[in-house]
Image (cartoon, rainbow, N blue to C red; front, side):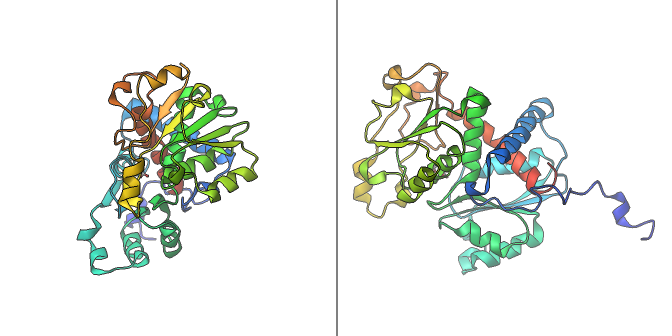
Amino acid sequence: MPTNSLSQHLPFGENKNAEWYGKDIISVKQFNRNDLEYIFGVAHEMRGMVERVGTFDLLKGKILANLFYEPSTRTSSSFTAAMERLGGSVIPINEVKYSSVSKGESLPDTIRTLECYADVIVLRHPETGSAAIAAKAAKKPVINAGDGVGEHPTQALLDVFTIYEELGAGQVDGMTVTMLGDLKYGRTVHSLARLLSMFTNIKLNYVSPEILRMPKEVMDEIGEKKVPQAEFDTLEKVLPETDVLYVTRVQKERFEDPVDYEKVKGAYVIDPDIMKSAKQEMIVMHPLPRVGEISTDFDDDPRAAYFRQMEYGLYVRMALLAMVLGKA
Ligand code: ASP
């Protein structure tokens, strides 16, 4: 190689032998307990680095394509912030109607295009299974940022990381987690319930209106791991034993019949009064956005963890980007 070659000026490359190098993140089913400990360890370090130095050059020169076919505030902006805090840059495609998607381009073709320019692709799409289709089309890593009513694996990782950081890593085993609201269409609870089933002595309560129950397929998978699960239509009975109350929004956009939505919207509202019967040492989480299911009067209660939860998402997404790009 000639001495004036460009390559002599390059910084160290990525570690291609790292376990997560080049991997897609499509479903929580791909993780085991050791993976979780590893991811949360890296995320914890990212938290420390952000607190100490703000931004650093771990992913300098790397490019993320952030491709969103559905609305997003937190997932999209936290992936952007994660990449930029690691010194990388982002191609944002939040408005697919201005891209060739509106000309009828297929998802695999759009993915093949973006991977010519980017090192990693984050995808949110309205169809279940779309992230897996994208990953099949791509040589570069694809990260599922929500595929319809399917999964939202990075949300579930940040949810469990929140529990670790808020209540202590050792606390998850033996915990009672109550999921409330739209368990049928809420993809975050589908991923979270699966992820929590990797812990021991965990108990899962599902509180929802009859028509918004946790899908059988998810309950069957969790049942195979012998995790106790129970369904309720009111919260009162299970709130006093709950360590984590995970509240969800009724997913208006997924209903076939708007009349059904009207029947169940506002079915549960968490407020200071109802929370009197909950433990003092517990947390209330929500993937957000909320549309009335947690009263703003509760926001100043120390148990209200939902705003801190968003921040933990930044550290988990920094960890995941560094991992799939061979830098962690
Ligand atoms: N932000 C979460 C999601 O994308 C939850 C929600 O939209 O209600 O699934």
